[in-house]
Image (spheres, rainbow, N blue to C red):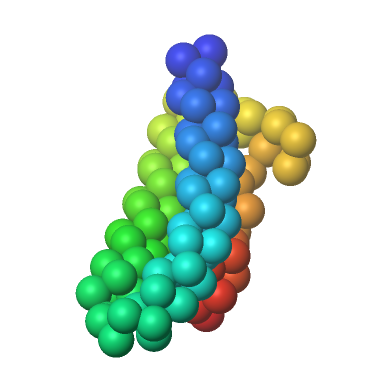
Length: 104
């Protein structure tokens, strides 16, 4: 159970890093769109859109990892980690990432 808690904590820290990266990416996307407009190019905006998609996918995979850990904990008879947010991850980390990025 201790190893599972360590993994859960590491995953929660990773989710915070994903959210921070999403905020940085959102700011970068604004700059890229502005530069694209001035240079009459579209590669920067397109690249940021691809990064946004990849980041949302990473958040989805992280949420699935949480689900798998929950199943493992239940199978082992362990109680779920009681962390700051009540022990369970937010229903959809990807929703937070999408919200930060302004894409959904």
